[in-house]
Length: 187
Image (tube, rainbow, N blue to C red; front, side, top):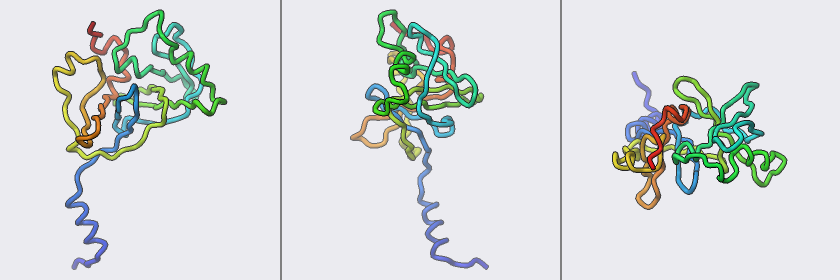
């Protein structure tokens, strides 16, 4: 015989009417909102020193858990930027100028894991936030945008409200791939 409890009744009512949601890590980059599934994010840490890749190649190294971790310039990866010789300071030189003792300009490293277990770090200017997003908010990217747009590593749009700009859902496996494996830059 089942025992009726007001608490049990409230819980089952919430479950029946509850909409499925996904937890996402959300961050801003160049005035656009991006999101990653929480399962793909291993950790967010203060960014320490990064090394290597002089000349602005967009890939560097840092130490994480006593091993080398590749740090990818996420702006270049997502927005298909090709490095040039006359470009602004790379993430390597920015890191050295933004030492951890300068508390006013703290940067963060978002550590992302692919489905194959490969880890990379993505430098961020501001800490990311955790959002619970209803499944109905996800929409596919228009095919024309994928073909003509200057963006990659995105798998869907997230439309939270009509009065807010959409978020771009990033594909963690594409983020960690070498550049040669990604779609070519369209000029």
